[in-house]
Image (cartoon, rainbow, N blue to C red; front, side, top):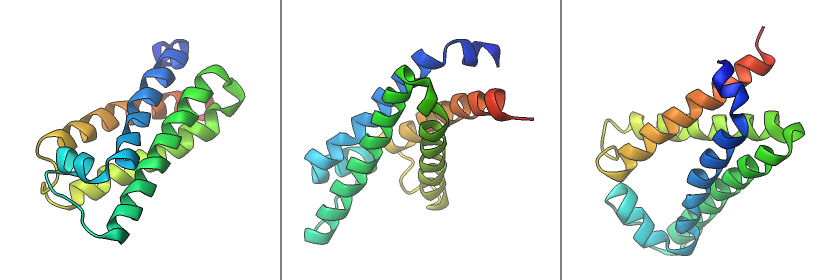
Length: 128
């Protein structure tokens, strides 16, 4: 636990960059969806929803990057990221493996590691 607290700035930078990489969904929604999930999204509404989703995730990554250098914002940024990551992992797992093949499965593994590190920091800083 001490290791996470001592290295939280580096952890936030790495987690922030990885999370911000989802900006690709804002820029290339169909290609990114096919690459990550093995399926495409079609139609104007899907395009808008996927672009918005990608931007929100990228903004969460930006919050983690900001929090790396502004300690007063860490609790909020980490809390938002944890909620987002746990929800995302839950949604993919709930689909009984349909989306866990290939890159989506890798994102679940990476998000699980990031969530564990971020939750460890939260526990160390705010746990009882």
